[in-house]
Image (cartoon, rainbow, N blue to C red; front, top):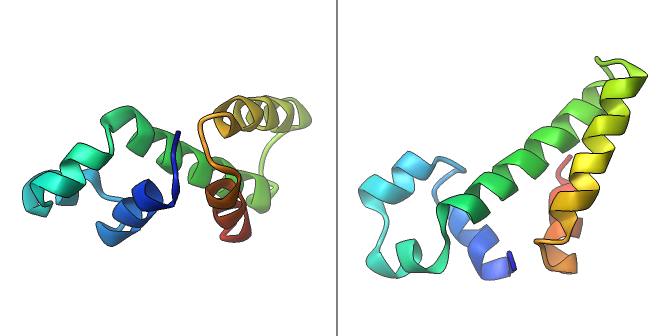
Length: 86
């Protein structure tokens, strides 16, 4: 489950996993894994794409389906925070 602590780590390193790997503390690295990092990144990307309105209806449906599937990996608070940043 991606909680607020994991999201704060993501933000701390500006969403750049290389920054986490190069400069992150052992504690930060232990709290979030690659899949969780990727899921946060992907949800933010989907929200940006949906906001842009530069895609077909079928792509929009696919993005919304993927977003719904990814949402199950997030705490409600974190998902709402990501959605508000869209």
